[in-house]
Image 1 (spheres, rainbow, N blue to C red):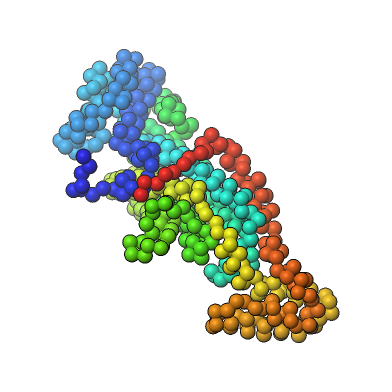
Image 2 (cartoon, rainbow, N blue to C red):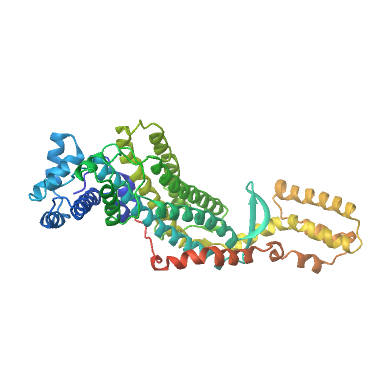
Length: 478
């Protein structure tokens, strides 16, 4: 039964995926420790140390058989997490216990595991980011031609299209994808560096053979799926790496916060709405409400992620010399939970973008309220072509605009600016000619073409590269 008497982490209980939660689970962590110990022992054996295949096979046979209770009991006595698992592993591997963790320091398993898990987590984040971008791509293509009011300062501005606006969201996420991919591709292991990063213990094991020590580092990296390790370390890899990784996650959060803020504003205008389940309740008091709770949840989690970026910055900048342990407790929280939160953000984001509803009639209504003001420049230019005085007509438009705006704002009446211009013979234009100018399509510029060009040149190549990872459907539980 679930324990209701202790704090439960909402990132795990409510928000993130089982896949991301597993990456940072004790089982995942300690299995990786054991993989690293096996890789170290295998490489040492290959380089001539007195380690047997029988010992390696015994370690491999017990890779998944993690005796957590033994480790917990030993850690209570030793107050050392790594040594407790070295000893616990040795209980299962009596033939190999003497060579487990040979020459290594705690950071060998701790730091290398952190890097490995961060890479796995970034790869999972990338898959979900691609699925989100793909949802937005389909949305942008569907609505590439649909005119809508553009907004600057949240004031009505020149028209754009619904699809073009979605491309603005995609552009941000594409930049995040590129940064994330760079981090994945350039990530290195801490490697086999010894107590303070000098490899002194391994140089002793190999009796001063520098080439074998260098080879050991390369072999372990290769066995763990990495091309290289960082050339120099102290006892730990530089904690700047944590800041670089979490900064990419923060950037994703920034993009998602911006996108969902836009969706919330548009939902307030009743132009676009996030998915709303049949039995979903918008408000406990106001039964008619359809609150954008999914976008709000994303925005909330994004704030958390953005603020977490401060932790690795403080940790890195305050480390002493080759290392101090005041990073440990902080990193146990900040790294894992930032990944869990971004995973949740993208899961919810996939759900939202897979079911966005567009209310075209409401969009048209808002355009019709504002378009007369926007059309005046075109009308003015056309009237001048027909012999009108530019300055006089400009003044008339200014006066008509102010009078019409007053009726709209103070009296709540319809915008009658165009009717005023039609009635003025000085403009030398018929009602049909003026109304033909009023087609919203005339005011969207190259928005539809920009959508196609952007998607063809920048989005499709990325999606095509990861096409086998597409198709994620997210059904939110809460």
